[in-house]
Amino acid sequence: MRDRFTSDLGVYALSGLFSLVVFALALGILSRTLPGGLASRQLGGLIVGYLLFVGVYTTAWFIYTGIDSREEV
Image (tube, rainbow, N blue to C red; front, side, top):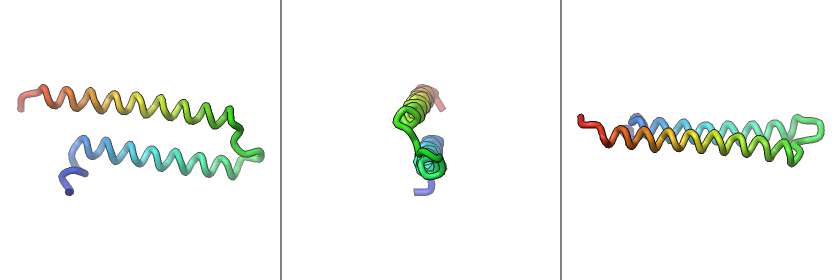
């Protein structure tokens, strides 16, 4: 089990999960601390930006696994 967490893909998966948790916590904090809360336009912009980040992150992950599988060790 430890091998999965310490492998390169495990690190990618754990850091992606960490990113999701931090994003959700930040949205919760912003919605409570902003005087008017998060407006739908602000929330939409944050979510679209985060989804773009996740898309690039996932693309990099698949490219990395493709390179790793094609290399001869």
